[in-house]
Length: 449
Image (cartoon, rainbow, N blue to C red; front, side, top):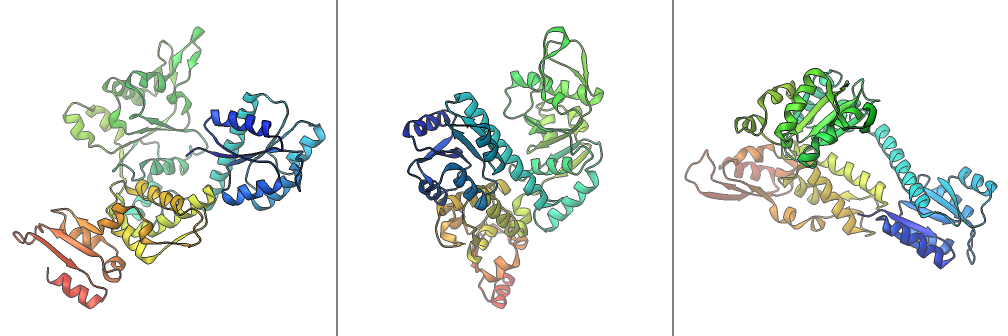
């Protein structure tokens, strides 16, 4: 989704010019010519940033007055002031009243883009810092299920060790969140946390990205990710996708804590903690010749498993509430809650994409609801695959998955379960039954099987 920026100027030519520059940079500009237009645009959708002229003809307020009103309601909304009659006094006054920066007309397009990007980045960092303080030390592991409590205990024990960690688990289960939490709880928390995406970096670029490129006189022409992570943590995301040739060089770095830049002869010493993640069976890959077994054993000093969302269904209410709150605040959506029926549907779904898929479903639902006055998210607003699924138990998985469901779903929501080829009752074929809302009837129905 492109970033929404509101451009405010009484001159149509300036509005078009600024909008064109921002559009070329991939932003989504909207425009207003006076104070009424500004407040109407903000009510419709809160922008990520406002570019605001000081002097506005045919406007009830000038730019400084508009700035003051905006800051009363949205103190963290970045505002960049522009003016064709700029003075030092005007610039100082604007910044004192909360503007991020001041640009005098006529302005250079590159300078406008630079300041806009800086303002957006500053706002993002401020939001992240606020969120980190609000989340507390365990912000990354939301929920209170047995699976997540066990994971918290492991993270607490391992966080401050120098040992290498290999985080395994299905895609979308939160492996990077676990890695970031390990870093945040360690003595390296104030140092860099660098992610190497082994799946997205082209194999022929992997070594340059990791180790950098030597320039003239032994100075780096390009600093690699390994060097940038010095003193901190380097995460190999989906390490199983790393080319075999690079795996051998990584193995040597793990042993020696030193490497050579591409095209260079001088060794570069680093102090880096390595955390890796994978959704693959690396030992099976090693047996097939796709992954080095010696590298696997070097990386797998402390193994951690990220549970799938299906293994922690009790955490879905807390996760859903967290995502609703975070997305609503970031995007200016009204605060919503989930109906009991909707929550039951979310807890009954099998979530092949895990926590990432849950977040995407929440975001999609909030976007499609828009400014709907109904504060409750109802079941019919969920994607069809969740509504239609009910709960489908694949053959061979049987009662274990039903037992893992929260009792609220089983005994209160009247969910229909389809059980295929139950191993404990060979030859029964496909059986279906409905667990009714009355607990006694429900237990009797379950007892029949």
